[in-house]
Length: 239
Image 1 (cartoon, one colour):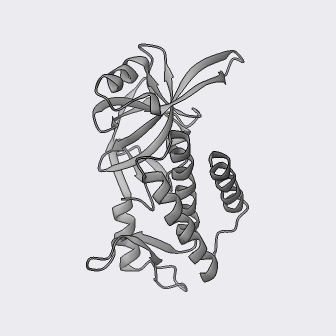
Image 2 (tube, one colour):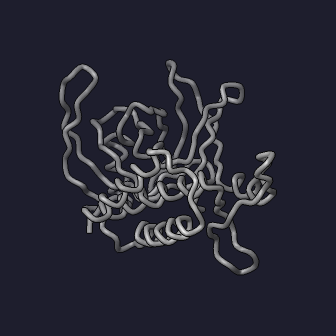
């Protein structure tokens, strides 16, 4: 199951990166079906840690494909559940429809940051219980949490043995190696938006928490506003 999920994620990522950005209606229907399947696996509480991470990443890749094909994710009408529908708008002028603008607004989260020594630091809630201040680090492969935060999550019962993914060796910029424990964080909440099932490494005590690529690559987009000292994230395809 793990291998199947990772291969499927790799295949759709390669398809996306190859420039296949405009899906035909039949392809879009297949993308939606794949999105629904991976979303269900991603959010199922009983899904093992590694499989849940793979399913969530696969879902978020399909979200990008659908968004690039002018499909929007938003609330359904009346009692209908949220889902993907054509965005509409004027193809000639490129003007988005009202629905597209509303759905895009729902997908965005904005968070103020502080500048500390030339880096951006912002608060996030981990596993629904603990707040930590993360440095936004696009050069880090994974989210990183210090040992103190991992121990706090263990004490409050939101990080368990079921979230352990073993050890992994990382190569640092100076060529040296570092062995770190890898865990599944069940959620990272920034502002009003939450990302589920994020891979993270546990760093030594008194180190800094990093918001790395295991979080950033799953977003549809993110940008820094240097005027308002804020970061805007877009979580297309999940509320």
